[in-house]
Length: 335
Image (cartoon, rainbow, N blue to C red; front, side, top):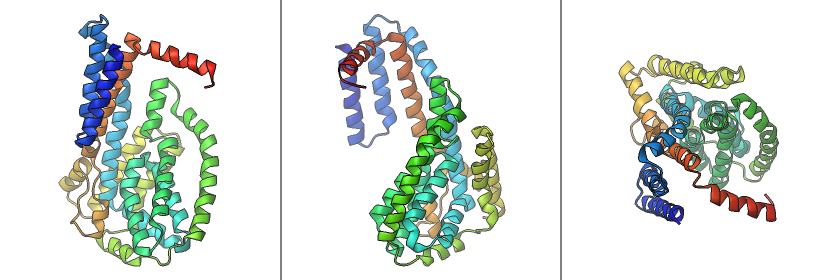
């Protein structure tokens, strides 16, 4: 009964937090104290429960490191003009009649490079939606193609925080997991490419929005060198270089591009890495505002506190009764 009360309390905290638009971290913290209270009620000492919490939280640090690097990476890719280059040259090389397919393919490729669905949706996704609106493409289908594409990298990229978390929690090899996931993903990607190709033919973009492309070219110095940070993130994981080194190399290169080609100061480029890129509202460059290490802090806090849950659940076995009933139900019906 005490566990049911804790879950109800936790669910209520989540509902209040969502309703009041509070950071999820606060609801997760309330949940942590609720489950600690269950452990105390069942006879465990507070010190023991705190020690139980640490192993799960420690596992989350691997993902937190990746998320912080992703935050820095996306902030500097925005300021370096890497995202702007991908958008402008992607649209120049691809026919407007295949815009829907292009939106899907670009989202797949970029999410694979940096391993984050949120980061791609908030950068390339925003720019592609603006292009769809300006060119008269179907915005709902474009949004669907983008959201479909960004999850390819979230699932199969060596830089993905999800993939790294799974490898850490299960004690398995990251690249072995990715190779196995690729076997199922490539079939889905092939079917999706065909699906979005047909939708491109059915809902073509009537005209290319050259105005936005010209505005981006005026806002950034789009020399081919600014694509090098993205090339690093594509190539190094394929060579089975540790994602940490690929991130660091790409971050360093993007910082150099920001200073050398976009003429930002050293302190300004470091500010972009820490707090995100910021351009004047209303300018074309403002499409890429955001990113930075600070943008990941709330998510990192949620991951850390949620990691403590698994330690308490494993150490106290408080979920064993529920698991036993689920297994029994599974045997009577089917998995």
